[in-house]
View 1 (cartoon, rainbow, N blue to C red):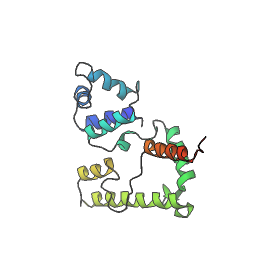
View 2: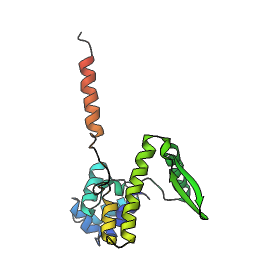
View 3: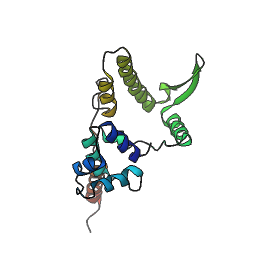
View 4: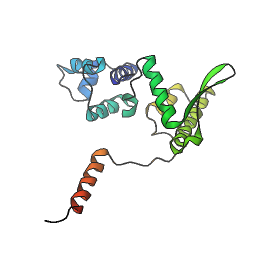
Length: 177
């Protein structure tokens, strides 16, 4: 699903108008609805800063908005093929139903994906047993990994910071003329 569709989905879920959401993220009131409509229809793609502001206003993780483009079955299939290549995702059949599985022997990435899927299954099971509400389950999903207590997450420096550090170290290694 493209980012515009995700913005639209969460805006409707939260009961917001385009004008309201547009003004919350800082667009002028007279053009807020038009600007937001451009993002929702895919005419424009929000930059990272705006995506973060939209996510905050919609009370979701920025990653919940910016998902891979799976608007078509073909796009979805290629996303699954990529998951097969990188994470060892496999397709099989169990009890007459097609199932997706992670081959944890594929490597560290596959094992990590397996852990994340297990955390998801745990939350889905809690919803199914009515231990948590649909609202709590959606809150967990839309803020993932913020509320995932099954794993340890490390903060990784931004690409901008990483690039600045590489440049600084590269400059230090250059011989004086």
